[in-house]
Every structure is written in structure tokens, then in C-alpha cells.
Length: 155
Image: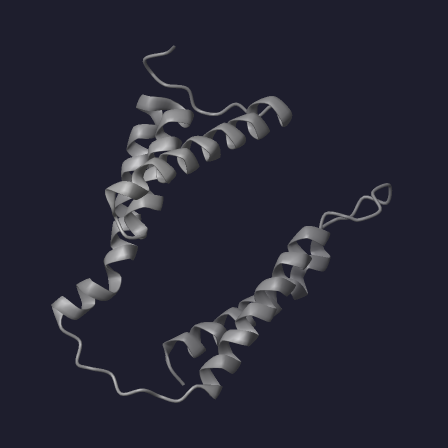
């Protein structure tokens, strides 16, 4: 079994263990669904996906891999490393620019750089970033009354 299969097995055990201890969450008799409903739903979903990962790993043939070199490793993990760097930059800019502008920049740059970074894709990426920021801001600030970080220069 390859690494993905072992990760799936680990997830199966974690989900089973967490599902077994969900009964320890105290339930309110006045609430029909109960506090364990949503975690139970998520654990069942993760369990099904982990099971699919294990089965896929068992069914697929093993392919011969080329030897791992630093160039191959960097090529394989470049999008992941780029995502982590952009997220780190997002966390640093969040207090300075506030939620709206930093989220717009983060989503736009991630959208643009993870696809083919062509200049003609930049306006679409900016629109997606602006739309994501506006919708998220509206849902959390106006509908749920959750205060999002404000820019330091606006305070």
C-alpha cells in the first residue's frame, strides 16, 4: 500500500475513535437535533472519503516512480509551497489591510497563480477575489453579526 492508502487507514481509525466518543457530548432535551449532529455528519463524510481513498489505493496499480531529486520534488510541490507562502502573506497583511482587502488580494493571487498565470486571466481572478470578499463580508458582518478584522489605517 502507498502513502495515500496509509493516510486513509489512519483517517478511518481517527474517525471511528472520534465517532465513538461523540456520545459524551451532553445533549439538551429541548433541542431536537442535538450538539453531536454536525460532528457526526462530518465524521461520516470523512470516513466515506477515507474509505474511498483506501479502496482507490488498493485497486490502482503501482507505477514505477522516477528517483526523487530536488528538482522533481520542487516541481511536484511548487503549487503547495506557493499556497503556503501566499497564506503566510495573507496572515501578515490581515491586521494591516483588514479582512476585505487582504482577502481580495489572497483569493485573487491564489486563483491566478494556481492556474496558468497568464495576464489575460488577471481580470477574472480579480473579479473572483472581489466577489468572494464581498459575499463573505456580507454574510459574516451583516447577516451573522461576526466582526471581521479591520484595517489598522482605518481605525
